[in-house]
Image 1 (cartoon, rainbow, N blue to C red):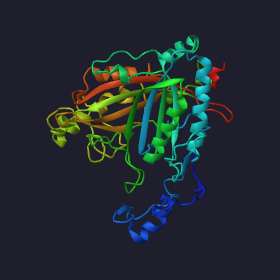
Image 2: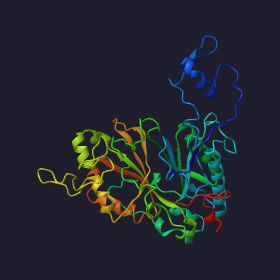
Image 3: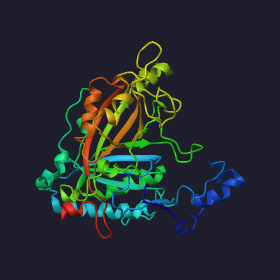
Image 4: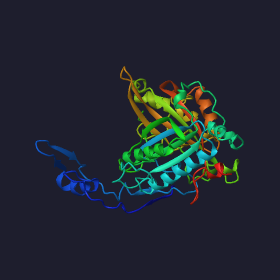
Length: 422
């Protein structure tokens, strides 16, 4: 499914600093015997709690995703525990030459960090003790990038701005952007380290426009692999296209012969910050929640029976003659066979950004959908949802972006080189 391999820990050993402090590596090797580490000087005392069962680096931390691949990493990569999304705007006076230099720096940094190595310039040491932790970094271009760099003729038609939708309550300050970066990792410090390194590498060429933080369940937290749940407690990702599907590449990626040529093997990412109105949602009974979604909350199976992957019987009626899956159920409306075959690869992160003054959680979904053409996939499905999705009253779309994500960089190339040096 992804270009992934597990490698042994090759992080060089370092001498411990003076005093009682312990490195992460020494902490892991002693945690099982001591449970905690005491330290301090004079009358001061403290402790560093360790996990009950320390997990060796060779398990989760050593997982590595490859940078030089056909499709950029972070698209078909399995969901990671931590994610950061960020958009940058090119600074005044920054043109094509400066943008190319920036993408070259960013690509070099991404390649290093994904290999578990420090960045080339002024590394912050945040991830010094960690392995790659399945880090991925993905880069994309927004609609405005092309005018700023004099490349309007290379802007894809599929990158035309998304239309307005009735569920939109968009904050323009947290939408769009010249450049988009997606970061994912199974360790929070590794993910933050990558975010900080890329921000520093932007230098004077680009400034941060917006940034969002997300999370998912940590791999290994369940007894067996399962489809992720969102903050509504619903299984989210059922019927996602799979790389094993015969038409997967056709639906998700621009073909090698596609237009424009620089987008060959690339994809388009629709990014939406969707706030969930959890107080309203959680007042509903489980039965009502299932009617809104069209699936059982416990296991994601359709209300018509079976398991999570069982086909939904849209015509089945109950003893009272009404449809078992309501006409406005979210799962019914979004089915590809109800939308002319339109399909997207959904790869989201949940988010929680605190609480409002009245205690309402600012939480929801960082929706990320991948497709070969958003005008034939996301747009028609969202328009249909606008017309009567039962879920709409419990969510609010607060930010939006659409980005062209070129194919992966070959060895010796940087991401976007075929655009910027054509």
